[in-house]
Amino acid sequence: MHIPDGYLSPQTGGFFYLLMAPLWFWASRIVNKTLKAKQVPYLAFSACFVFIVMMFNIPMPGGSVGHAVGGTLAAILLGPWAALIAITVALAVQAMFFGDGGIMAFGANCFNMAFILPFVGYYSYRLIGFGSAKNSGRKPVAAALGAYFGIVAASLFAGVEFGIQPALYHTAQGRPLYCPYGLNITVPAMLAQHLLLFGWIEAGITFLVIRYLQKEDEGLIKP
Image (cartoon, rainbow, N blue to C red; front, side):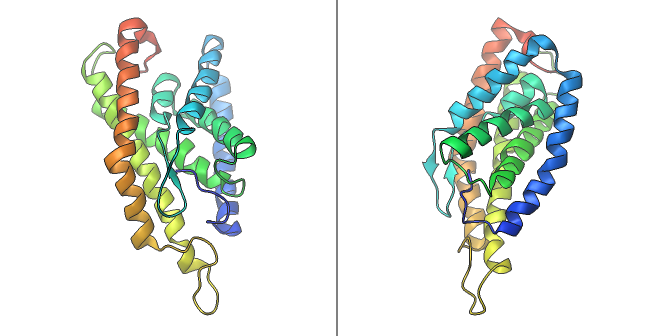
């Protein structure tokens, strides 16, 4: 799902940097106030886990790649604002040292994977699992479904960001300057891959980890 440089206009890239700036600021304040000292290692571990999971990339049509993220899992364990920080750190390392995702597109990638994904996933998990105990069989199912919805939502936003480029930025003759594919191609391509494959991988990873934690340390699971 990483967007490389050259597929989004500088204006689009700048817009998402501006959009993410207050979210990064607010997330840092919330995490600083709410994250307990003993949870800090878990934040670092979550960033490492997300980084490793996202390194298993499969090329996708339209200039992006598909992969699991682990964002909903991080949000369930630490809260969505801490997950935003963890995923941002992982994305920054990937962009700067591994060329996985563009520098100009960094804000857009963070918006999709560090904001949309964990927040949609976490609150879907809270809604589906509402009222269930931490050791309930409904908890890992809710976590898996939340993870599925979260990554599919992120892929939808990425598809829209790709697809609006030809309409907004083109030559006088109508030749696209950035992503050459319209919404009729990018949105179905991104959604299909994540609805049929990557969403289930994300859900499976999340289900297994939450199920394991129920047996070993259910205190790590947020209600």
